[in-house]
Every structure is written in structure tokens, then in C-alpha cells.
Length: 421
Figure 1: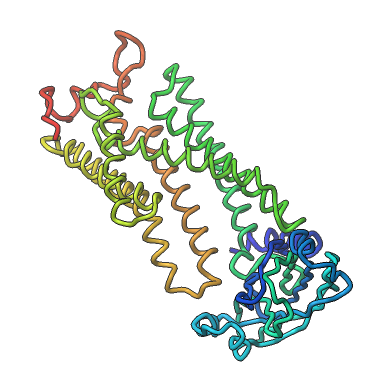
Figure 2: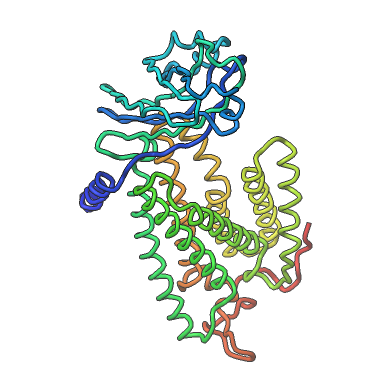
């Protein structure tokens, strides 16, 4: 781990000089029946952090102010600790929640639409990190009618970092993952070129993996750029983040389809594969899972895993020992890929809230890279998958096998097809 120290040190200096603050801008409504408005939360590490807040009456509320533009309304900013937050939210009377606040500061807001004076305060954690919650109160009942307030709030951790304690390792871990994935992509490209030189073309499963790796590399690069820009302005580059999400989803779809089709027997047995049959069954299973209350992402993963097991069971029926052994390994990798993320989400729940994001993000990155590495090694090495699959045959019409046996002569299932369920 000593090799990571210079990288972490450099990133700490970068965040110290380039990081401004986590910036939040939104609106809250206060009035006769709304005396308490939640603004934000922030995870502060041990040491001294700070925050700032300013408010103003929105244009709509200013127009409804009945000409009293020379007056101010006094609001209060309350802070709450994470260990008290559940109890705070259980108190029905918002004004009674002041009893659980750790600090209370008044803010005088002009009714003419001008910004209030910026309120600046510090937060100190001596023993461990804490998540602090912030809310604005109007329990003096100075606003008889409902009025909308705009606010801008910034947070800084100790050392000038605007990343919360939950996300403090987000940029270093993403940069490290990007470096590892670039190295893997270079090795993968080198082996693909060697395959092209040797055979003259790439098999479809290899092209599918090329798409997966390219989309994941693009997603990782855009996400790292978004986080790097986030260190300047506290908001990042939203289009980069959207494109990164799209690229990541596309890579997951292709990789899921690849695992499903191989589980169905593609490249392993002499059978015509109809992708619509496999993917259609997955969509049907996803619909059933969604009806049971699962999120779309969870439902799709669980449905894909169910169809993956169905494919493996169908393919293994009557298959020779060598193919059954290979598919057993595919079953293990597929299980990690399809149900690993939901399992990790449940697993990290035992950790403190500020440790969950870095542990989960790092674990998911390692899972993605590990799956792609294993597949590339299966497709481009001369291992067991190569020996029993059609990758072992010449790509030229009427050509000779690339090893003494073709897939049909290798220990695969007999030419007579097994009946599919």
C-alpha cells in the first residue's frame, strides 16, 4: 500500500487548494403551518469544519409581500447530530425540535428580495466523524402567510475539502480504479491485436467484451473528470456524469447478455441460439420481480440471475464432464456478477453511514474489473474454454481446426440436441 501514498498525498494537496465547498442551492417554504424546513446534511470528519448560509425571499414571495419591503424577518438555523436525528424527526411539533438542536443561530432576511448577511459557523468533532443535519425554523411566527425562501449553503471539512466524510475517498478511489482499468484495457487490446494477427478476425464473444470494456472505460473516465471538476466548483460537470451513467448501463446490458448466452450454450454446443428467447424470458422474470416490490435495478439483476441459472441447467443436461466443469465456474462468476451488488448493499449496512459509500463503491469497481478480467482470460487464452468451444475452430470457410480437435470432436455433448425447456 506504500505505493499509493504519493497519489493520496497529491490528491490531498489538490483538494486543499482547488476545493471550494459542497454547494447547495434550493428553496424552502415557511409560514403559518410550515415552521420548520430541512436544508441539508453533511458528514464532517474529526477536527473542525465549517459551513455558511444565506437566504432571501423568492421573487414570488416578494410580490406577495404587500409592499412591506423595508422589513426583515428573523429565521433560525438549527443544527442536529446524527445520533439525535431519528428522535428529532419523531417530534411532531416542529418548534419542539429545538430542544434537540446542538446550536441555534438567527438570520435576518430582508423582505425586498436582497440576500441576508452570510452566516458562517464552525463544527467540531473530537472523537469520531458525524453527520450533521441543518434546518431553518420560524417559530416566532413572523411569517403569517406561507412564504418561499431561496437559500445557498456551503460546507467545508477540515483541510478545505468539500467532500463529505462518506465521499472523502471517492476521487482517489476512482482515479486508482481508472489507472487499473486503463492498464487492463491496454493488456486486453494487446491480446486482441495478437488474436487478430493470428486468426484474422475476432469471435463475436470477444467483440462483445470489447464493447463492455470500452463502455466501462468511458464511464470510468467521465466519472473521474466529473469528480475532478467537482473539486473546483462543488457541482462537477453534470453532462459528464449523465454520459458516464449511460455508458455504464450499456456495458452492464452487454455483459449480462453475454453471460446469459454463454450459459445457454452459445459457442459450447451445436445449437442455434435465439437471443430473443433468452432475453425475453429475462424481461418476463424482471416484470414478476417488480410486481413483488423490488426496484427496477434489483428486479432486473435477480431476473437475469434466475434466467442465467435456467440456461445453465438446460445446457448442463446431458453435457459431457468437461463442459459441466466449465459451466460450474461460469455459474460461480455469474452469481458474483448478478447478485453480488445487492448482497454488497446489504453487507455494508453493518458499517457506520460514513463508511458505507467508499466500501460499496470500491467493492463494486473491483467486481466489475474482476469479471471483465476473468472473461477476457477465458476468451483469449488457450485454456479450458478455448478447448471445448468453437473458438478452437478455424474462422475461414473450410479451414482446418486451430487444434487437433474441433468443438464437435472435443468432449462436448452429442450432435443430437437436448430438448430445451
